[in-house]
Amino acid sequence: MEGVEPQTPLAGDDFDSTISKLRASHASISSVLCSSIAAARNLAATAGLLSCQQEFVSGISAAIAPLQSQSLANKALHARINNAVIPSFSLLRALSRADRLERHLLTISSARNERRTGSQTVVYVESVGRLSAAVAAVTAECEPAVQKLQEAVEFLGRTKATDKLRVRRLRDAAAALRAVCGKEIERMRYEGPLDDALIRLQDEYENILRRLRHADVGDLAAQGEEDGAGRLGQGMDDPDWPTLGSVEDIEILHRVSETLASNDCLDICIDIFVKVIGQLC
Image (cartoon, rainbow, N blue to C red; front, side, top):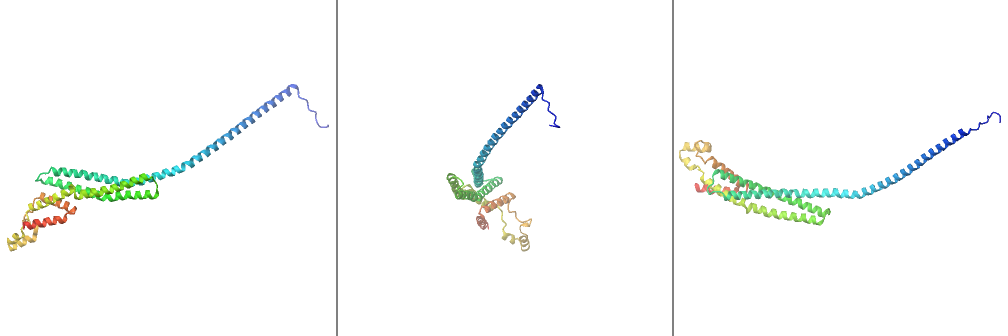
């Protein structure tokens, strides 16, 4: 054909070189394809493994979720039980303190002399006051402690949040605490060392009143119309007014009166005072 130049046939060496290059390229392409296929298979296997692991994790999460809820419920339950038991521990500490003070009061009572000094009497009155305060603390803490336990028992029984054994133990504890409180408070207030000490303080109160030097108003008035009336008008502010007693006796009488009055013995104090004044006049 016109215009087309005839191709020059390749020489033998050039033909062999081209074939070698083509074969090398074919081998490289085949290697890349094989590597790609292997990588694709590895990726597919990895994806399958990840999918299995994800399903496994999802299964574990589904299994753990109820356990987490149960754990939170158990923590809330334990917190409620602890809150119900804490007042009982406080009450037991108050009972223990009252018991120590009772033993201390018994010790100083057994060691006292028939004629105590003023300082010994003050120590005795202070011990009675501390024991009285301890008994009052036990009385104040008893009902709240029992009430807290009872509320916990009712809550657990109503919601069935725990086993019956624990509910029964709490119920027994509340009943035992109520019985102990009622018995111990009754004993400490009316049958124990505190009651004996209050009786002794009543005797001490009467003895101090008898030792005091009470002014005879009739004698003062008889000393003279003007002089007597003036001194009666000034009363105990008059420097010439007879001394009632020593500072120590007055202080002890004040402390004994306060202690007796704070323990519902005010009426007895008034009766003793009226009796002593009536006997001295």
